[in-house]
Length: 119
Image 1 (cartoon, one colour):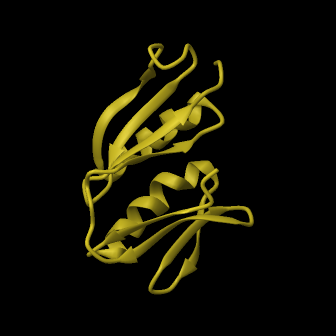
Image 2: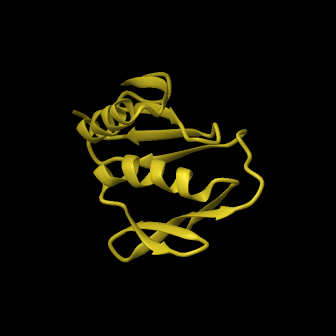
């Protein structure tokens, strides 16, 4: 089980702003606002942004408990003008209830929001 992820960027404020917007529907908030930006839901801190050399060749996913949240996040990204990669859809080749939407963060990383539950 992964405890947390830390990504690097040259523009901490811009990347943090992206995640503030797209993680809000999942209940994530910015809980550490210093050189490092730390996000979490409730008492868990599991996503961090720090200054450094970004890598765009990574892909990670945030779990959404309902398909409607995947749709809501995608709509937030569309309204904010963020880069949309793939619209939310079922991916039955993975499993019958795999429902995901994909965005690109300001550094080009592929960020997935996925729900594994039936409608």
